[in-house]
Every structure is written in C-alpha cells, then in structure tokens.
Image 1 (tube, rainbow, N blue to C red):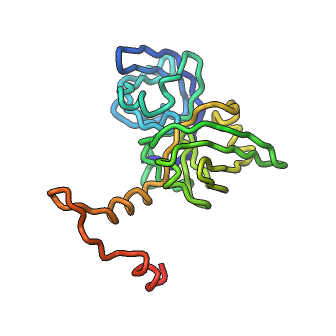
Image 2 (image 1 turned 90 degrees about the vertical axis):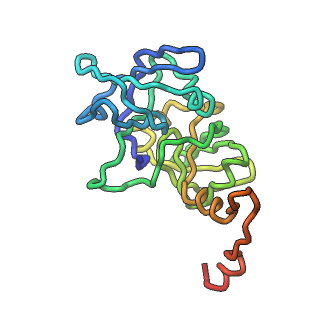
Image 3 (image 1 turned 60 degrees about the horizontal axis):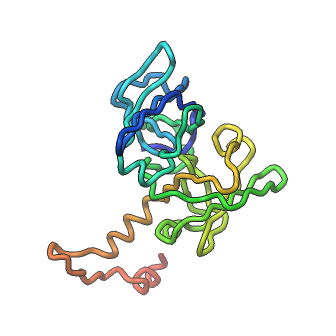
Length: 219
C-alpha cells in the first residue's frame, strides 16, 4: 500500500526484456534506505517487488509481469527513463496522500497542459471503464502521484498541481500525447462490487441498498 507521495525520481539503468516479461534495474537513493529484498516499491504507480539490491551502484531490480506490461506504460521504459519512486507506506508515518494500491486500472493520455499562474493544469483522456470511478474533488493516482480531481467530463478529467509537485516528479517531463498510469480510488470499486452481488450460481442477488434507501437516510 502506498500514499501517492513520491519520494524521489529514479533512473532506469537497465531493462532486460523477455518474450512476455521484463526485468528492470533502477537507480535510486532515498527509496533504498532500509529497503531489503522482497520489499515493495512503487514505480510510476505500480507496485513492484525488489528482487535484488546493489549497494555499490545504488540500484534495485524488479520483475515486471506480462499482465503489468499489458496494462501499464512500463512497456515504454528505456534506459535513461525517469520514474517516480515511493516505498510502501509505514503504519507509523503521516498519511499525506490517499490509499494507493499500486495496481493500475489502465493507461490515460495527456491531452492538454496549461499553466494557470502558479498552478499547472493537466487534462488526461481515459476510457469510460476508468472515468466511471473518477469523481470531482476525489483522488486519483497519475503515474503514482496522488492528485485531487478538479474536473471530470465524459472523456477526460483534469488536475491542477502546484510547482512543488511538478518539480519533484516526472510530471515536469510530460508532454501532450504522453501516456500515464492511472489508478482510481479503490473505495468506489468496492462499493460497486457490493451493490452488484451475485450468488454462487452467478445469479444476481436482490439488493436492498438502493438510491432511495440511501437518500432516505441522507447519504
């Protein structure tokens, strides 16, 4: 579990691709503190397991599965690519972002970048299967960065970030047309699942939790 608060920007040192998977080696510094083999590190919003560490070069390696390559932008990584890095959250630390599982829902495309005084607006196009869980003033992780949704339409959503966030993440390198990993707030997905329960035979169960019920009790 992560918070979406990027700790540092790392650099891809090596990527070895197999027929359907890959092994990536990433140079970092802060995320290697107290990290051991088997720990989780978020790479552009994707939870990867550390399989090897090199204190000499200051790097770690992780396997990228076929499923991850298919459903994220990690397939486009190259040697020299910069990536957002975050260690798994500590239970005794501050929770500054939102709950990020590191399991991306899909890939979006930056359609517009606009400066607004000190803020920078990013508009991201995404499929309806992702946008159904994006709500105004809710949270979304973009390449692992916890951001507040400012606007939502039928085809895209927009976020407004401060210069600090842009300068401390790879968002400063993004251009219109670039792909980004997206993870929506997990709460909405669980609620939808519970509202569409099925029995063991796959038949839809009658659900007593309706819009009218929630409205009656002022939800």
